[in-house]
Length: 202
Image 1 (tube, rainbow, N blue to C red):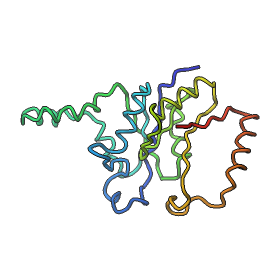
Image 2 (spheres, rainbow, N blue to C red):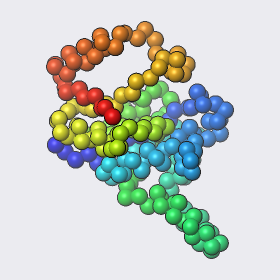
Image 3 (cartoon, one colour):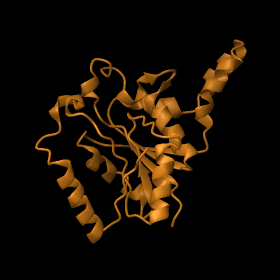
Image 4 (cartoon, rainbow, N blue to C red):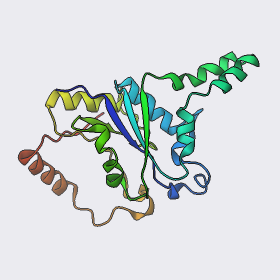
């Protein structure tokens, strides 16, 4: 089973559900503690062995590119001002990963965004991570568990899912839901015909 070394992070969404917080900054740059959400995502991918990442951006997302760019002037100013302790907070700039960028011309959904990654991933297996989502589940990080399951079971695809309450789904996006048992039965049929379906558990 091939080593997974590439990841794609779609970050072109408009973030309208988080207005007004996202009016002037990307939702992926909203801070959790002292770091933006997308930084947590990139750092977990690197810990899972990913060495190349493609960020699919859109309009008004330049802040994401600037965040991961090496800022030598800022480092020099911090050191000159005796703030060496703050230089360490920029260690993410030197992570052992190469980050590429391309732009989705219009926010037309996740599937359309992934189309822009075709040349980047080629025929290699790859990880898709959402740039506005941090997932904590169990002692081992989710991406590492997904990769391990993919390799152990020689799966065509492995997907992490999470149970949610319908009243917690913003904007009423889930409509005409089928009973869960029916959905699982159809997944089993798909597995039998085409691929191995795995469910990630804590």
